[in-house]
Figure 1 (spheres, helix red, strand yellow):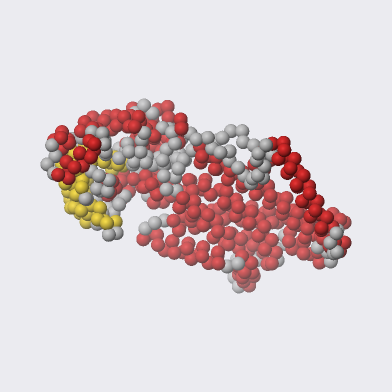
Figure 2 (cartoon, each protein chain N blue to C red; figure 1 turned 90 degrees about the vertical axis):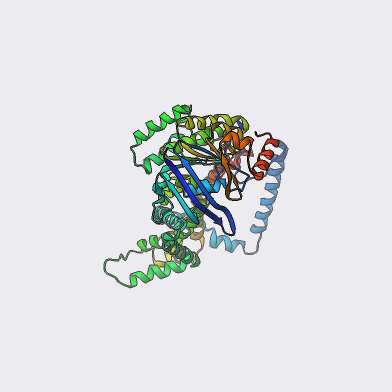
Length: 248
Length: 305
């Protein structure tokens, strides 16, 4: 296993508020990392930093041996290799599903339209969305929209996929269809970082669970151990609250 | 769809309140309120007409402003010159749409690299919004030809077109910019995360959504432009207003102005109604997340029926 992603000493502040206070994380290829922690613990910010949507203050992020936070690195080129899916889907409402998916491959990878469309159709087929190709996003349910958003990120063939609480905006009955897509991706060997509140899902799918607290990775380990026998008090408190809420 | 991409599942589509244009406020129990409305309208306007017709200056007013023969004589003449305004308006509109968008995009590009562009566009918009249009028309329309630079056109129509484009682009760029700002930042983030450059994000994701939203206010600005074409008469373009002044001076009568006023009313009101209709349709679309509501009736008379 080679290192897919390496984060060293990552700090990030918004004004006076220090959101990330020294994150160190090594991710091997094909690994699925679940990031758990309370709201405001820095999960989303960490993912947005890895995608370079937020400039970092100090530290290094290395993807497949290339330091993406180095000076003079072309951010658009990095973003092609790092896919991200957002909590609120963020599909482009003025484009059909198919055009949403092919926009990146057409304009960024400069592939031919016909090639992009047949690739996109293959992906839609794989996730049971082929009949939605010519619909506009607002005709789709939340679960369908989020699956399209995942397909849109996959169409760029990223090295790493970042999922930022992708089921948090969904009605409960729509969560499973999205989680199943992620399960399939994990089975296919996609390297993923998943910020999630779905502890059961994290236990099933993750190769490692990281607990973020106050901008640091307080504790990490195998999901079974992390979720049943955490070493840190803060982790235990967090999981207790989750269990009380009936989410585990 | 909401700008931040929060979904409306199709099975939960909320039926919108029927989109409404200018309301006549004729709610309630059909027949009876219709009757009351009719009576009160007749009484009100009847009274108004009575006061005007019995005013002491009415005969002289009638002679100076509502002279039948002069009206019949001047109407075709002002209409024929109105084509100059129409040409000016249509050409300027096309140029303004392009130039205004360019300015808006320049002003909306983030990051330190684009600072000079932002500065340039901001100064331009501030300046041309600060200056009364008539001053710009007089200064540029008379000033630049006076320089007598070789190859610079001398045609007044050309300067009229340039000046209207310069002035109105400043306003229109602000309308575009409001549209660009109304697109939720998450749309930009989603586009950038795919690797699209700043300009590609603008072109393929932000601007198409922004333009759709600002079509009604843009049309509103064009109603203003349509009327402001008369300002170019001050640099010697013989268009409808200049022609009106000539006719009025020749007859010592104000009736040609009434004819011209009528022309503008007839041309502008349909555009205003069309704008209202578009706004209403846009509201309906947002309510249903992009689904058209079929079988909508006329805005103005729909509630009377």
